Image 1 (cartoon, helix red, strand yellow):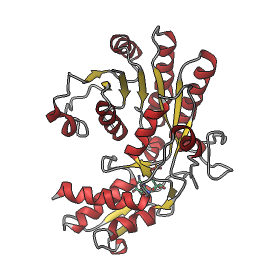
Image 2 (cartoon, rainbow, N blue to C red; image 1 turned 180 degrees about the horizontal axis):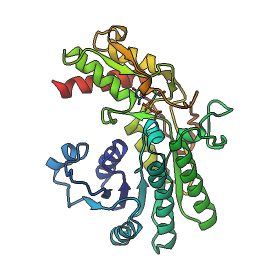
Image 3 (spheres, helix red, strand yellow; image 1 turned 30 degrees about the vertical axis):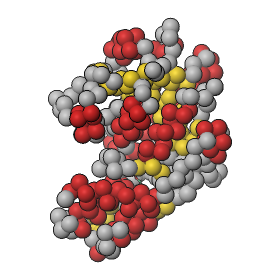
Image 4 (spheres, helix red, strand yellow; image 1 turned 135 degrees about the vertical axis):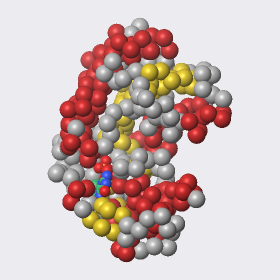
Length: 325
Ligand code: GDP
């Protein structure tokens, strides 16, 4: 049975990918940062009662900038597939902490590629790239060959990492792929992202636990898809005959306001009665109209995204109501 190693296993995508790989019979190893907090809010509820820890799911302590430890884990676990999901993933935060964003997102990826280059048994490698690499593009929708023109520190760091993956594939023959992911959401999305912030507030207000939501600009448009559908595609990418890059997107955009409206409506509320806006949540620079063209993934991976942004708004609000009850 195949073995996978996942960086960022405690995140939204890591938790879905782990579930999917365990269901397929994989042995899964995950890298986790050593912090004083040993509660893993996404993994523990899923796996503690299933008896998989230290049987088919193993966690290893390693920071992304600790190349020696990562090399040791790779040599010891001999994975067939390496999914690199880790990194500071918040675009807004990347303006406040650009150096550490680049340290982990850009250099962290290069360090992994350098380790892989030296390994005798090289795992197939997947890097989670981002639509932020396109920044302010000239073409709509964007596809795998759209020029990268990032406008945020996170986008710049992801561009570096994405191009390094291409370079190591072409120059050193690594089986290395980029999943160029547009925003993908779920009930497990971190609460600082606008979708989850909205659905949690809608749930709280509907239950009388809160009365307002404070947001920045409502005009931003995003191509929002469903996280578990995107992790399914990530797995498919590493099952192909040859490595390649794939855009994962729905091809449709919605504004923050439309998402807000759908979430509040789903619990019988009007968002206008509860909204406050604060410049604190506005970005120094915004990507304008990012929308992805998933044709390549549809054709090669036979993958089709099905959940729409407005369905996600409903599902995520319902999940937040359920967990608050
Ligand atoms: P990302 O920027 O695409 O990674 O995703 P976010 O969920 O962080 O932000 C999506 C959009 O929501 C952007 O256009 C933000 O400017 C907008 N937005 C408006 N208010 C907020 C807020 O309070 N928090 C966040 N995170 N985004 C907000």
